[in-house]
Image 1 (cartoon, helix red, strand yellow):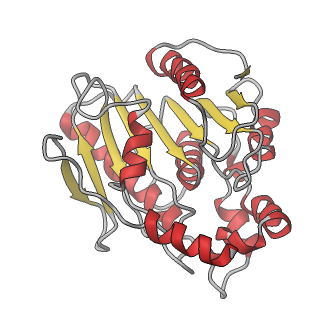
Image 2 (tube, rainbow, N blue to C red; image 1 turned 180 degrees about the vertical axis):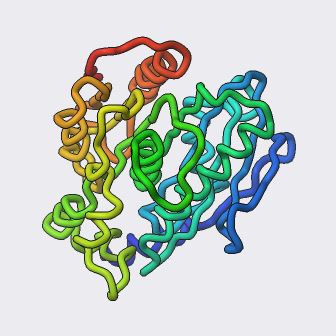
Length: 282
């Protein structure tokens, strides 16, 4: 019964919807694959938001209805913030393509920011779930003294991480013990690579440094896909950088309207000012 339910969930989630015809956006490529593209939604200021969708690195897309809707809870397209929405390669046995793609996409976005005359000092990276992992990875690596292909010329000002995977191997072990029928990490990593190998090279926890930008982490205590302990890893490792918004009893995104409202206030404070906010429970 569980297997059937998961199949239906994946099938429904992979049905992408077109962006509304009254929304203004452009698309550009950063690679040759059909998914290596970025949507640009111009805003009314020079502020920039880089948005990365989730889907466990195995399904979904940058224009899928549910991701656009979730982004819209906090940032509206064609309003104050210029939004770059990253597409990347995903699917069974594709690791680490999603991670490599997002790093190269962010480098391409940095070039677009310069060409379009947008702010190089006011760039926020935001992602949910697997997108949170990719936002953390791109933000940590591009703000630190790391040498890697696709290193970007612009460091992000802030990272907004919604229940992202911080340590891939730890998350794999959690799923193996608690939800073995839905271990998306095992689906993502191909047979010719090990979980430890991918985790060592692509876990954000491996790239901690003193110049990490402001970081907001939102996580529910009852998340059964990315355990709350992943958020606590960041809180313990980066107590002066990370603003942890804990949703008591919150699952994987399933927050109430009141909780979303409280989260938005915290994100606005970080996005539009340079305030340092305390760890918060809602």
